[in-house]
Length: 340
Figure 1 (tube, helix red, strand yellow):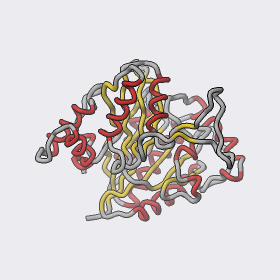
Figure 2 (cartoon, one colour):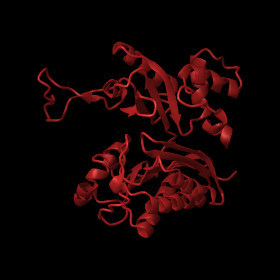
Figure 3 (cartoon, rainbow, N blue to C red):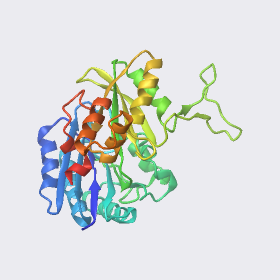
């Protein structure tokens, strides 16, 4: 069996059907690649595309879609709920079968060099492909977002890994790298109050929040560093957002290592924290795909039984997590193992 690589480019466009179709067509037209999902979100103003293939085919597909985005997306007019650095915000490569993290690092570097050289877009490498420890975390690279990118590029400490330190007003910058499977998983709340969602996000995310005194001043340790209150969940990033189309607040979560914290654990903890704030966790949403193992663990947690078939386990997990609250949930389009 050939090496199988997953690639999940995130584009800063979630509203124009013509642009989204063009991005998807760029992937479909690439030999040796399968397009698994295209998921636009109007409130996030973002589209997540999932594709799989082998080696250079995946790089070709990602580059072709990036070129379409560079022509079609103007960051000078972009506004959305999700943090972003550029028209093509992040392009991770993930090993799926007969592939190693080193293979994916090489693919990310090949993609990055090509985008910087041919499209003139500054490139940063993150996660396992990072060139510096302070660039491993995507949120650190993304800090300041597109609006602060010109200042970031002017700082020698933030010179891009590929391409000149020149602000590309139209396309911004792109982050690419190699990582483990990440589950983009959002929990819906019974309130439109985004401040409650943000409070829950601060309580659960691994990085936690800064500790403050009664006057609201940030507390410092002996070395002058901010004192942090750690969150309740490991390997979790989270923020609060408001979904205009559904008139609800949502805790938007990245499960960066689902073997450490999985969907059902995140859902239960959000529900627990929500109850202390007088609201409920009403359901959840999976953006992109997740591995079957995550559904099986959720089903077992819900009492689904180890003997259940794959589809039965997914059904039990879907009901427990409320994955069909906002939109119909089709296992054959959301579970990696059922698609490849």
